[in-house]
Length: 409
Image (tube, rainbow, N blue to C red; front, top):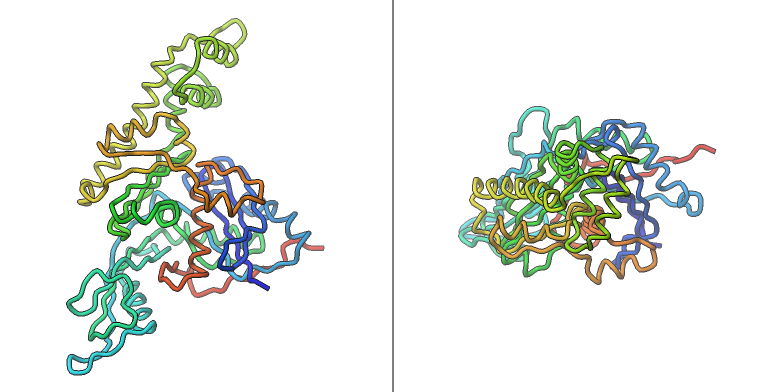
């Protein structure tokens, strides 16, 4: 019988849970989405442990009653605007100039482990580590050095660090639901590896996920992870702009954004929509082109910030393509705004046939609002079924995933 694993993805406005089997073909046995408010999760961080625990417990209650299961591995998907992306070098001795040795898995593991020993700021911890490239003596940019002969093995790792308190809050929230988590997966890294093509990663891609109150983005080129970051701004900021400019509630601002996110609508549709959100006897006097301009201005600000960060990190010339996802990518002209800012081809991410096949029997509507959760699931499955070193750092230690008794009888 195949082992099961569990993924709990902490998003801006929801907690998404998957239970799946560890097999060559990903088989999802159960999934659930529980909405959360900003008092429970805000900008990716847990603000109410008990509420999160209740949401997770609810998400698996029905499945747990029908099927006895104990997941062998539990993964947490997360984002955090206080994350830092740093690179570190690790080395391992393999032989001598007179007698070079064959590089083994043990050498590779030692080099990767040594890359984690970099001194980081007090109060922070390595949440995730990704080996980016290997060097063997004078040979550079090696994807897999196993079996080569050499004297010195070197690895460059990308390290994602975050505040220990934030990481422990994810873990503590799950513990309250009876779950012991094993590993952390930074959402944008999962999206870069799982929601892009090999060609895109080789040629240079900027992947952007704009959620409710966070924007995650990352860069890969020559199939190597170069940068990733989370910005504390998202679709909710568009709503706040519209609320301010038109003196309406935040809920009505959301409806306004949704309607004018469309490229095409008739005069009758617009009139009917404005009447539907107007107060009795107080029809809203709103010009559609002005709403579109405010939406465009805010998205332009987000893209301009990312563009500047790429410039600061010497990455502007590394990308040839932009892909956008997240709930805000439902704005139908968002790709055109991105193209204007970055001056390169941009498009909105669309789930591929692989994902459609995986969820064909699970009644899951594949939307861009679930992109990060789907990517974390795929990345966790890759970790468990592949020999490649896309490993995640264990949360505060080498703890195996176990399942406590979920529901008292």
